[in-house]
Image (cartoon, rainbow, N blue to C red; front, side, top):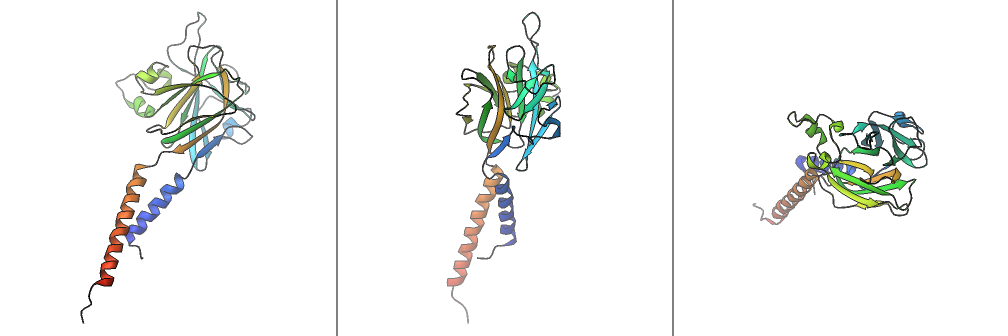
Length: 252
């Protein structure tokens, strides 16, 4: 069966979409070459860090809700230092350039913002440097950039938010869990999620961990599904036309 020019375009589109979204994409934050040069082994960064794997880029930012001398916490998030070591991956440090720092709630409440360049369907997180009793909090959502662009809400950046407004204003959904070194944490069936925040359990003071690896399966693109249906419809229509021509009576 010969393909029309339109069908060739559809096939090409399907191929590009399928290539970009084939299987899981995994970012391994251990070893010596994860992320970019600003976060080499032992490195510390206060700026956004780009991590690229399989042609997909993940943007990382570290923050903390700072504990005041009187025991209260700052009303909004503060910038912090994102750290990494080769054994256990990502951590956060608020004050010193120390790659051994973990993500903890023993003083300040540390957190890392993960900004993906596609929507997620499945998510798996592998933790490192933890005990069996460590707990974590996870927020999933989308649209932080649009939130910052809204001049009427008073939210100009992530540092204008806190753990309460992350849900009430930004609309993120919170999940909590207990860390297991033998069984990575997984979620499936996600929709409309391309941003993730990980922190120790809120309201606790003895949780600490690092993040060794994040693996995701991209959500199927609605554009991909549209072209898939269009391709099948065009193929069926062309085949019917060919069958009709083959068996129609020929005029002499």
